[in-house]
Image (tube, rainbow, N blue to C red; front, side, top):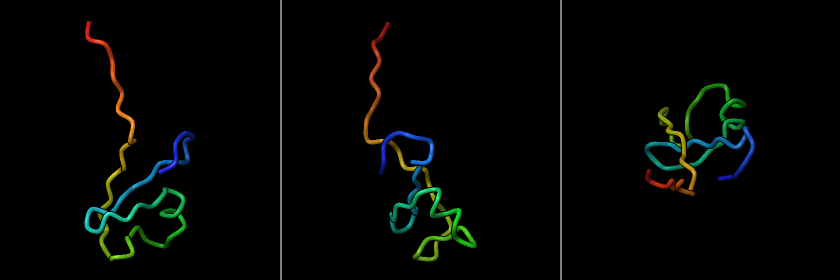
Length: 54
């Protein structure tokens, strides 16, 4: 997963876990994974934000 920029949003397949970017999904004629599954979830950033408690 790339960091920074608006075009670095990546999604992963709910069945097989294959990671794809939004550019790859928009270039395909239909939104479907290589395994044939059509459900994706937005991949989370690996860095967790920490804030101070008040």
